[in-house]
Length: 165
Image 1 (cartoon, rainbow, N blue to C red):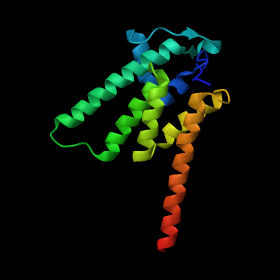
Image 2: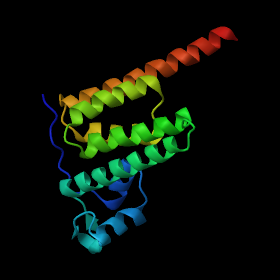
Image 3: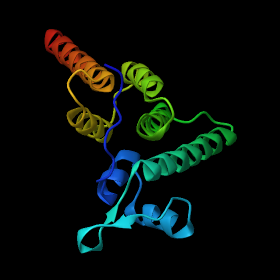
């Protein structure tokens, strides 16, 4: 089954901010400045974000992350591997959630997960997305493959540590 679009009609500000690792104040400022479309309001005047908002936020996050990467490299020194991994993770998640080709972004995320450890936030948002998808959906399957591979690696490292002691 191909990657199915997920109904994004009910994303809260918290959901959107967690996916893209941005503060709520940034999200609201982008909306106020017109960087993202105005939201419709739900019960209790709460903001409700749709796919168009997700794509706009993803574009802004990719642009900001690209600027951070460029600034980190302009100092003459290579960025620390942990900082680089965080930048790449943010880019891949932005591409996955709001980019034109989530299949490519998932493949890239799988490669990143092999090279470094995904943050707990990245794991959390991927699990949440996988749980919302129908069984058999390609993205759901790939997410679980990534997470299972991480568990295997973690278990192998723990087992190697026990053998040394």
